[in-house]
Length: 245
Image 1 (tube, rainbow, N blue to C red):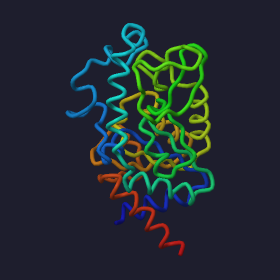
Image 2: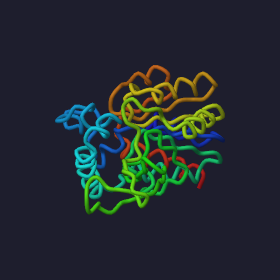
Image 3: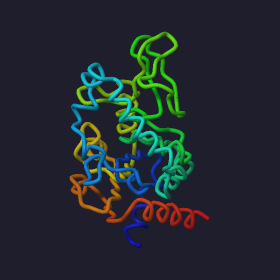
């Protein structure tokens, strides 16, 4: 309880808060993690499915795999961790949520200010005209095409591609002004997100980590809570609400 109360004090006494989430929070909803034993890459090589070269070589194969993922995600719901983060947005003056996840669960959970570092699996982009739009319904034929005739691709960041510059700039801007950063369910391995807590810490922000396991971020955390997000985050929000009631 002491750690939870300390986390609540750090997060909600801050005028500007950044929340950084990784695969761990989605795993609690039943979404397979990126690197876990049951992860999406367990039966596939990334170079076969998640690169521009793979898409150029066999767009139908790539789309079959992404359609399978989309179907699986269509049955997944936000968990209490997602919902608690959405509540946090209303408790802090300046709030930014940065996620490494492409599943869209934060939006479903009610979050509004979301920076998606790696894109969104429900959004498509035309490889010819650049059109972007959300397409949640199943495609009748694979690979799908745009109205202009060009191939559609998932609007996610593949291996070998740059992260969207505008999203990165917004993320770095938020890191530069935040007074606290909450890091949830991320291993602290994948760059550049792995550096975000260290950047914020270097600019004077306090760091709260929620993760069942110790990570590379634990070393710079002011409070590190060894618990699942779905249990810890609602408790942190509840403690703060009780204090300000």
